[in-house]
Amino acid sequence: MKLTNIKNFPFGVKGLKTYRGHEGEPLSQATLTYQGKAIGFVGEGDWGGPATLTVDTAYEAIVNQYIKSQPQWSIELTGGKVITGEYDDDTFVADVIEVGTVLKQIKALNKKGTYCFVLPTDAEGEFRTVKTGDEAKAKQWLANKYPDAVILEV
Image (cartoon, rainbow, N blue to C red):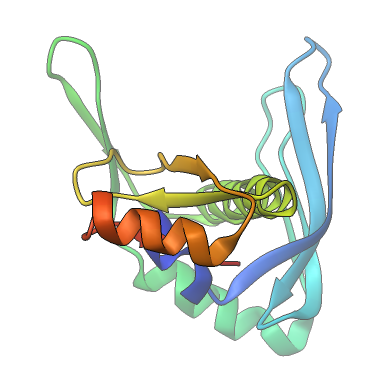
């Protein structure tokens, strides 16, 4: 997901918790939200299992429709081989948790006077920072130095 679209993503998480899996890997779980309203639970699978996605019955159709509307994902491996797959529950859970994690990072940086931005040439999922202590100063500096920058506002 492009970070410039992160604010328009209708799903989110609340109470994002990270814990260690059986091999010490970081795993996350949280309350799933839709347009700010709690609608279920998401969690990354431990022991190599599938992700957990539990949705209130009233919102199942919305979540399923979103999942079915997404294009296939693809990853290019070293050597140029490309692997593709269907966007499914596991992919959705990974996206929702990633968005929640990134938003949490951006909010924490903003509180410290550091503002996040992306340039059209940046890789997907990456962002840059400028520490000015003041949002107006950050916007002015970016307008002068990188006029095509997009500030990630949350």
